[in-house]
Image 1 (cartoon, helix red, strand yellow):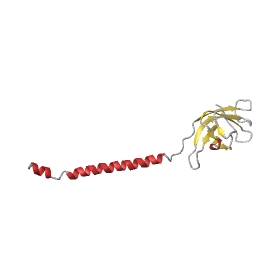
Image 2 (cartoon, rainbow, N blue to C red; image 1 turned 90 degrees about the vertical axis):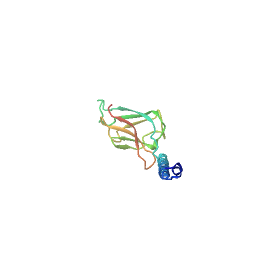
Image 3 (cartoon, helix red, strand yellow; image 1 turned 135 degrees about the vertical axis):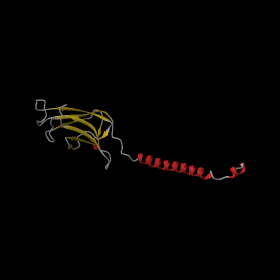
Image 4 (cartoon, rainbow, N blue to C red; image 1 turned 45 degrees about the horizontal axis):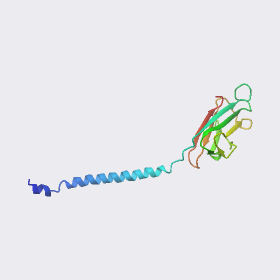
Length: 150
């Protein structure tokens, strides 16, 4: 084979163009998928507020155990984010307490005392949960949990 024929040969052009096209298609697909994934990132659920709640249980029966009317649990926001009261719900063993917070903004130092005279009874080892509810249609998050008698 002569050198002139080797230079004019076009056999290697087709595989090189094929490789370039495959790389270009891969880059375009990666860009489209990346844009799609990053675009969904802005529509995710807002993060739940960061707050620490303290639960203090006071039995009224004088025996140190829950089960007699007048038992109380005091819930205090000790630190963290300021939270709109309309977004918080308190549950005692699954029973919802309606709008218990005394102020519209629940912040460090805000205290709510629940007395079981007029609502769900408190019993030893009952779970008290504070649930944050974002906009309608989004999932709620438990941001505080306490156990009666601990």
